[in-house]
Image (cartoon, rainbow, N blue to C red; front, side, top):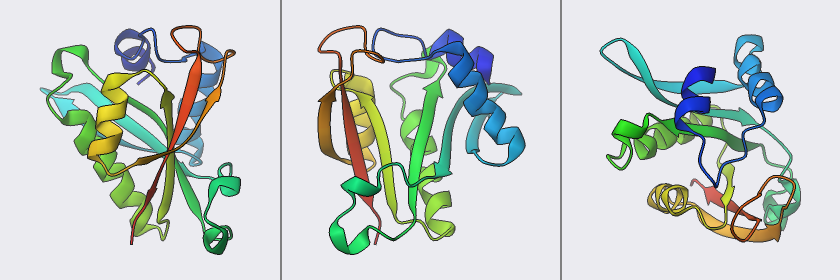
Length: 153
């Protein structure tokens, strides 16, 4: 998974510090992070990670603040398969798995100017909640992060 994300997830919009990414992926082993995977001919070609989280509680609509929330961590697809809907399908499956766990409020972040991520998130039904300056994680373009939200009924 680490090889795929570092080789095919790196672009001017993504923030992928090695130690943090490896720690996040280690969460899969520990059980604090979950993932949906895509394989082709026995090779890993994409994945989306997700986890229960309360980090976005302040952005929850007031009546929903105490409900469980989910967070989509990493989403990566082999560059040869980009633009074919695989990322959207993986994101949809991650949402389905969170919903199956009783989580209906789901958050995800992206660089404000990342068109591929923006399209994938819109396609999955996510709406923009907030865009904020984030120069520590966003070295390029506007240097801003957009937080997106999906409420599943």
